[in-house]
Length: 204
Image (cartoon, rainbow, N blue to C red; front, side):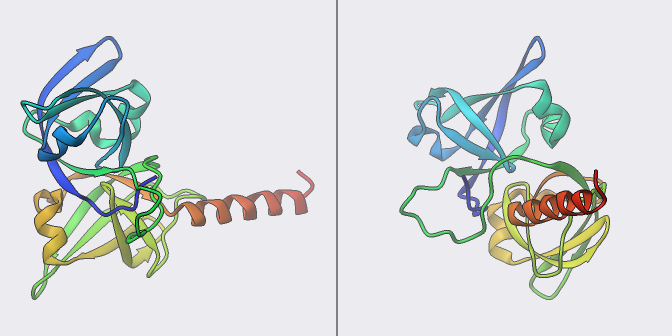
């Protein structure tokens, strides 16, 4: 489990394809603190560390086809900057919101507004009965815990402060950028329970 508070970023330095899988090697200062079989959030995708080279400050992860199909990892290239967060410790404060690292779908950045000291990002996504946003609700974008500003059935916006802009890959987003979305897990369970309730009412 994660909090959506990005620790640092890493850079993709190597990509190797093996049958239906892709191995990504990431270079980052926290690599020396990682160990094999550790869970790390990569742009909001929970993946397992399979190799660590502490001298080079690099580690490797493997993405299977299911992950590639559902996330923006299929667009990663050497040099891509990725948001990183290690899993939450049991004695940590939950500064963001509950983020599982299970990406629901991708979205497209449609507009970036530069405001007076902050930025507003707009995203469009394929709507579904479980994938919804609400104003002032929580959303994870590339693993970053954020508060929804505007909310429509297939669109939402978020406001980014300078600190978040500087320490995450939000500063690289442009119209057309593909990002990972994880909708609020509590909202998803409520939507599912309501769906089951209505089906029961209709005798399905």
